Image (cartoon, rainbow, N blue to C red):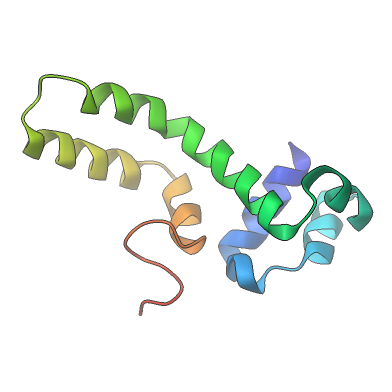
Length: 104
């Protein structure tokens, strides 16, 4: 958990491309080799962080999308759920969603 929290914070601040494994290891107070042992690469660590973020709101979104609501309400519900989570900032900084590090 400490590693994922550290990685999330660094990815939010620097984006995936700008993040360094050593900075994540320092922030998590672990050896960089431990990150590579468990996650193999920065991409593997980013995937683990993204899965943790997505698992916090995807189940509710899937339930809403499977409901009998009109499509417009489903889309509005998804957008509201995405922006309501404090994790949406992390997702956007990781390049997920309408705003990415390539957009101004």
